[in-house]
Amino acid sequence: MKIRVAMMFGGKSVEHEVSVISGIQALLSMDTEKYEVIPVYMTKRNEMYIGEEIGKIESYKDIPGLLKKSQRVILVNEDGKIQLMPYPLRKFGKNVPVEIDVAFPVVHGTNVEDGAFQGYLKTIGVPFVGCDVTASAIGMDKYIMKAVLKENAVPVLDAALYTLSDYARMDSLLDSIEKRFGYPVIVKPVNLGSSVGISVAKSRVELANSVDDAFRYATKVLVEHAISNLREINCAVLGDENEAIASECEEPLHTKDILSYEDKYVSNAKGSGSKGMASVSRKIPAELSPVKREEVRALAVKAFQALGCNGVSRIDFMIDEDDGTLYFNEINTIPGSLSFYLWEPIGIPYKELLDRMIGLAMKRVRVEESLTFTFDTNILNSASFGGAKGTKR
Image 1 (cartoon, rainbow, N blue to C red):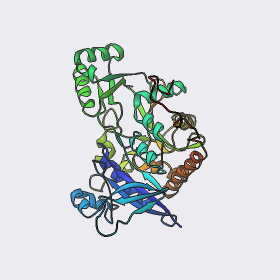
Image 2 (tube, rainbow, N blue to C red; image 1 turned 45 degrees about the vertical axis):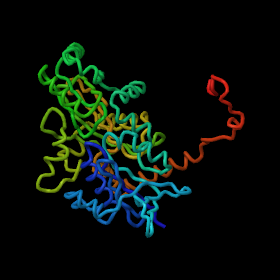
Image 3 (tube, one colour; image 1 turned 60 degrees about the vertical axis):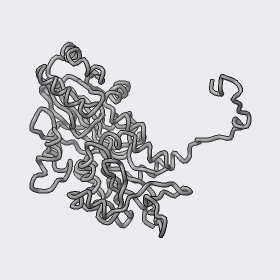
Image 4 (tube, rainbow, N blue to C red; image 1 turned 180 degrees about the vertical axis):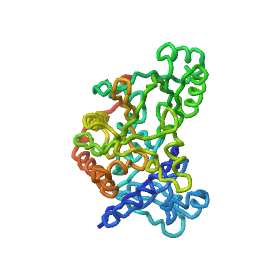
């Protein structure tokens, strides 16, 4: 019997469209002899839909029309069976649920990649592919992530975090940044990916504009020194906190100081249909010495495991060409296109990559099922609200 996989994409995120592309790419590459795949589109309100047209990229040119032809569903755990249940339930006629074995979220950005969606799946009891709640949340919060990595001796640039209260005192905020970092600096929302809201500032005017832009997308903003002689190198990792391997390295090419959203998803798609991150101009393999290549790959695995990741993540590094120092920049716990293009050069085709990710998800289920989450107690039999101290001390 085939394993039934709900391939889930979209969601309430500024990276919604990118997720649709990544999800359908994965859908089309699944091993259909081993898996029965049900595409599940999540709208920008996180409503879930299934149907014959959901897995076709052409259908997303008219999303309202697509939804009219599709069935809205909700996830239900019925006696341990995970079902996509039609919603709202019909008062007359049959409500035929679609049973699944595992969810495969291919989602990007806040509200879906940051642990929120993973927590929803975990609460219902749905086995799912990829990072768990904690790793997803830490991986999305760039400030907390840096703190964890520093504790694990992974080199990162120092950074400062600013909130809406700081933003309300703009002159003081700008003074603080100039005093601590000077120029140039990089400004980014603390919890977004796909280069949304990220920019480099080389003057006070540019800094004010960068801060304004970053606060459009998040309530907290991260600022750090921008490396002037920068070289960016990316590497993906496959595995879990116990065992993991690194992919080939790539060097993305871009038109500005940093790789922009346009570089990633727009400029390379013109005239050929978007292929997501697979269409970015890049060098694979990156032109690195054997020693530097292994340094990058080893550090990628170290960071991946320090953050407790699972499945496939892509880690973006920075090299300061002035002295050759390698820095961890950020992690994409569900990378665009699942970084399949970094695995094919080392002999892991996309179909096998997806299969391994599902295998890691099922391994996690087996491990968690061996743990104890409840134990017998008679505390409720003796509970009393007559006192003022309660029961927890």
